[in-house]
Image (tube, rainbow, N blue to C red):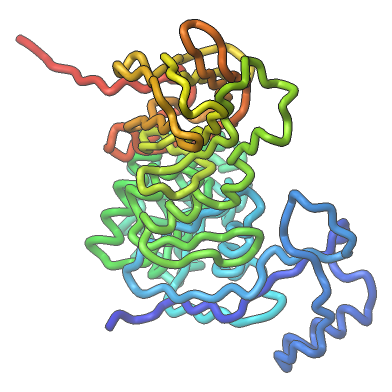
Length: 428
């Protein structure tokens, strides 16, 4: 049985909106009393759920609420969730930067964290001096740090600037040096937030390879927060999904990603019956709803680049005995309403003659080839060139970073709109 190195029990974190610190001496005394005696009854636990979509009437909000999980030695854990889900707050608690309002955190071993650009650096000290400072904080001797300093500097690629005060560093240089220090000074637990996104693509891949190395060879524990499903799936074996400050799922990473992609799926499923103002056509057959699923028929609201998806158009046929020559089609557009791709059933030699009263058209796409962005979807049903039913912008597709090429490299939106499933060869 593996050793548990992080145990989180009933952890909650509450913030007062619009105020830094307590408003009264009474509240300060109440918090102090709670911390000493760990008695929840001494603390006023009012506060709203951490849901940014709702207007709150309370002075307090729970950034985290009743969080429980265990992490074993050697686990590589991805923490995922939407913006505001509580990920950064959780990592700050685990890094001892802030304390929970209630609950307990038990950590076994030395922790190194990389949460924000410049965290743990003294701006007036040089890069070299900050390496020694961080090593000392982790309990290492000067000799131990000296034995590793050349590797740290080389990995960070800051040889030219290592004796310059870090206040003169760019954000990218900050991150390279901070990660290199955290990875090379042998903490038992390494905690990394989205800060790696500041670095360039080649350095991000270098960091991923280093984290794989230290978790595999040295058996160290890693907690990694990222919105990049490619990075998460490439590195992590276990996942924690947060939603509105609560743990929604803890388990295998692939299952965690599936759970994350299906969060609040109702908001991504159009029910077109509520708004017919945009509908045109004769109306003999009408689309009644559109939903987005993965290949296992799980409703999803986010699509990582490279994910295989299905777009399901449910229809109602008013004349099931009528013979048609029906073609169903879909248009993908940018947010600026510019068409970028059209596909219809005739391209697959499918023209429908007789349709039951109720049914579905299912459009399946292997390895969705769009770069991260938001897209709109139009649909149409056409019979002998006459529009039967058509509506514009009836589904918003939210495409996020994914492992399209299967090599762990995230392809940014600057690469264009489409990702090509292509290959290169070299001849003499």
